[in-house]
Image 1 (tube, rainbow, N blue to C red):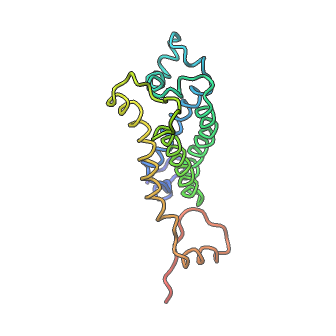
Image 2 (tube, rainbow, N blue to C red):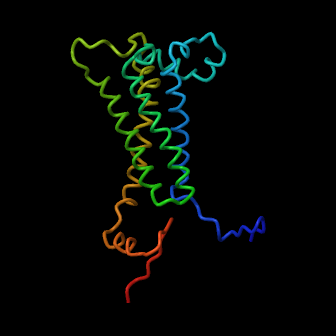
Image 3 (tube, helix red, strand yellow):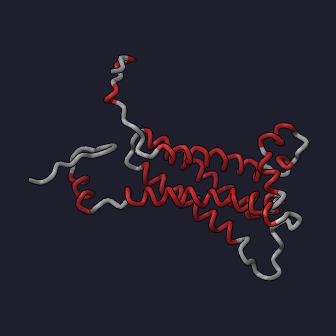
Length: 201
């Protein structure tokens, strides 16, 4: 038993989210924050002569060679999605904090923010899948199919796969049986975290 400042081992209660989901929310929030900084501060962040920019935005410089929307300074799509991503990043970090505090809203918030990320990524993919005739080419055709796959489809695909897995994991935890939900709301005092119900005799 730990004696530091009166803390007892049995007092420790883990986050309501699996650790891999919390780490993904943090990772996604950090990467998407850098993405927003890159797209919202062009052409300043496109300047590769700056050592700091070359280090922080190295991946984005490579990506923009394939995805022309990331190279254009006043591109409507990336500047619009950037504003949406600011909210996503905030909700990611908030969900992690609430999960560590064992808030009963943490799972719902984590589900919601991942659904937002998933749907936004689907929308972005549709710009590149069978665009209407006469639409400006969004890919840089100087790159091979393999290069475009590794630089464009793999990174964006990651933001499809992980949110999908999280939605599957959290869906069942959100879909509580009606009887259990009714028992919860019958409790007089407010509760946080897990509840224990005794079986009826």
